[in-house]
Length: 194
Ligand code: IMP
Ligand code: MG
Image (cartoon, rainbow, N blue to C red; front, side, top):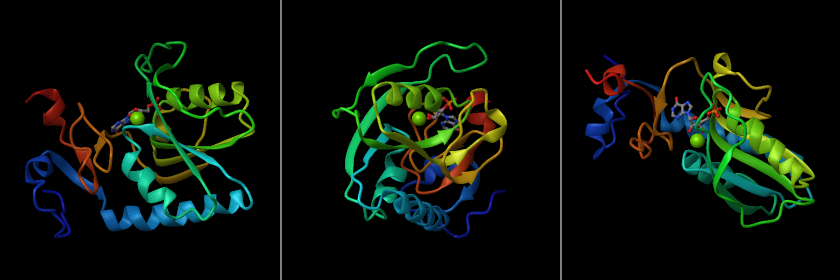
């Protein structure tokens, strides 16, 4: 049995049943995101950073994060695919939706849900620097350090987790569970088909 801390939101019972255990509650997430956003904000006094959210996983984290920034920010989004980021190295990142803004000379903050092998962020950072960004800072909600295969690190990370598949707060399994207001470990039976 997992602990729910009495926090099962109404309407999410079906999704909740697929959770092995909750690892971060909404309150824990919000308070840590505020703390991290305030640290990031210190870097941008007198600047106008472009905050790039990587869709779709970062959407809820992104919305929480930007509301704690006092610097005047511009918002932009990308959809990228990290297919092929498994054991076989796959070359270039596939861009499904590109930025609306030119990043040349801009201070860019990349906001991503999770850094796993590091394929996505290593390639994305290189791409934005190649396009002439003045600076690229990576902010992540979660870090799976033991899964890293690429030489890249998050500049600001909210929580370290182990090698477990997590869902909720924007993160999906097969496009489901993104709307759960907490982060939970997915039951293995959901993906092993038991
Ligand atoms: P990377 O390119 O291997 O670092 O993978 C990053 C992407 O993999 C993230 O943006 C997520 O979309 C996905 N991902 C990795 N681990 C998880 C997880 O535990 N739950 C949901 N998505 C994950
Ligand atoms: Mg993602």
